[in-house]
Picture 1 (tube, rainbow, N blue to C red):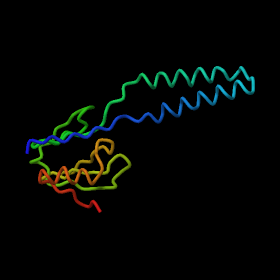
Picture 2: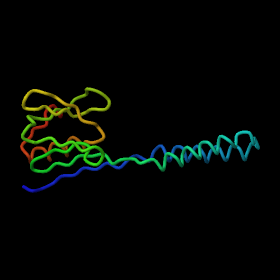
Picture 3: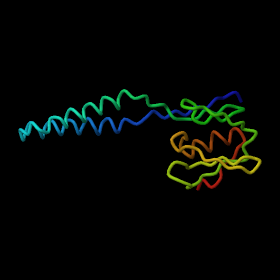
Picture 4: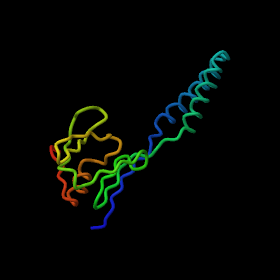
Amino acid sequence: MNEVYEFRRAPSRGVIWLSATAVLMLIVAVSLTGSEELSWLVWGVGAATLCWMMLPKPVAGIRVDDDYLVLSAWRNPRSIRLDDIAYMRVTEASAETDIAIVYKDGREEGTFIGDMPEIETLIDVMAKRGIAVRDAY
């Protein structure tokens, strides 16, 4: 087959937008009310926003080729041989896990929800490689 599937999820910028909006609202509040004692809050939230923007935010995702499923491919890659996987199961185990990998020896491992594509896409990708995704619907 020689087809490599890569799924990448860029980090969310929601926190940055939220804190930038908070800085703007604080600036408006300080200028309208004239309360200069709140200006330190504007500087503090602004500095926290800049620090958050400078922190590295790794890309989440998986890579699947003919031989391996690589979890957390751009963060902390961990390869799993496709020959070792019996099937994958959709699960509601926790808020951080929605797919469990069931190995042929009976072990089960949860995957990070941020790494996985939509269930329909995962079903198609894994079906091309002969691995079933159970309990999807």
